[in-house]
Image (cartoon, rainbow, N blue to C red; front, side, top):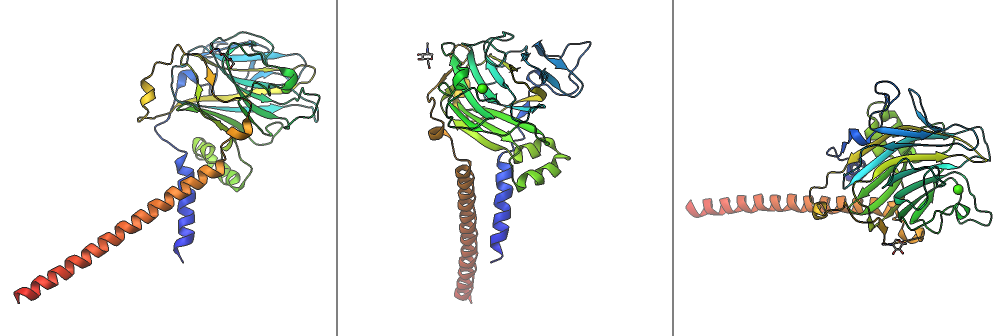
Length: 342
Ligand SMILES: *[C@@H]1O[C@H](CO)[C@@H](O)[C@H](O)[C@H]1NC(C)=O
Ligand SMILES: [Ca+2]
């Protein structure tokens, strides 16, 4: 009877620790953390364009004013094969019902090119994670805004604002990340050709619990309460592209602030594909525009982890039983041999 609560506690700890790999480490040259400024007005490893303004506490890509666009781009190409990018951001403004347009996290071949896709060029090559706050679509939509989606482009696709990019997206989810009191983060993980996007925090008891731990260790708490937006397999991305973030306002506006960007190199010692040269491939995705079929259910993975833990528990119990039986057999054997001698 006593075993059950203990088992639940251990499996919760298991779920939390499963996300945490101390071997993943932050790449300073692809990260942007406070204090931002180096000497003078420059930020080491980062360049900015348009309306972007750097303060001590945040980088404002656009102010809450009409027709602005701004971007920040990493100046070092990213050769990391498996990575996780964590962006701490804040989208806020005076608008209660009308606001826009949103921002995009880029992993792109070309940098510092202004254009119509949230401040960056159209027909881009690379990956776009689009955090769209304004629905341009006039008809019925199959989702609400704000909306997070991913687009992979080899340079041939056009981003269609009138449809909010829905026919070129590979997956998406609704996420309320605007005008919130608490901190908002997005995690983009590219691991073994699987792209997973998660947001933080998740609205649950875990959030308040991890928020109290966040005072002690920010990284740990962030890992604990991520909520999965989508996960898509078979995405091929080349190495050597650039990380960037761009934002735009039009008739409607918002402050688009970036507080930090952290790129972690994932430690996957057993991945044979790690040796493969990815520097000259074109970005591609095997699945398109069917988000509902390709969204992994996060409950499933939690369930499979619990199942794994359960199997390990049974294996441990079986092992203990074997040892006990072994000891009993040995004692019996000793007794028998003693009987034989005396
Ligand atoms: C580029 O992407 C489009 C759309 O996914 C695809 O039809 C085309 O074959 C791709 N081109 C190359 C050269 O891979
Ligand atoms: Ca839009």
